[in-house]
Amino acid sequence: MRKKLTIPKLKFDKDGLIPAIIQDKKSGDVLMIAYMNKQSLKLTLKEGRTCFYSRSRKTLWRKGETSGHVQKVKSVCYDCDKDALLIKVVQTGVACHTGSWSCFYRKIK
Image 1 (cartoon, helix red, strand yellow):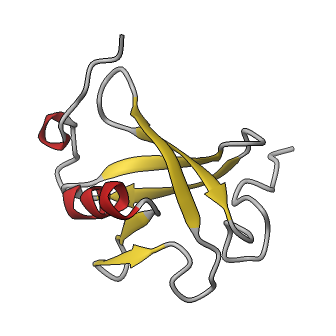
Image 2 (tube, one colour; image 1 turned 90 degrees about the vertical axis):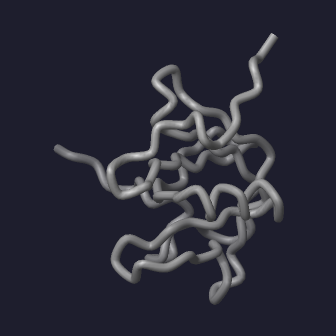
């Protein structure tokens, strides 16, 4: 049986952020990593689509708000240390701003 965790018990970093790994529910592909604060996590849970915190712009952003490439949330899990999230989604379009399906398309040789 899984224990329900409330948002305040998650371990956000000194800047109030937690990394969120986004995974395609059907394929299992890791699509991207982004950061959430408490507000963006609450919006994600409420709206059922991903919302992140932009560290560079210092504001919230909903995935697909300009591109239409939205992520419908199917589940949100946290790791054993409570300091990272795994969000399984149904991806519409591509996840990466470069036009790639996943942000992880390059390999170290």
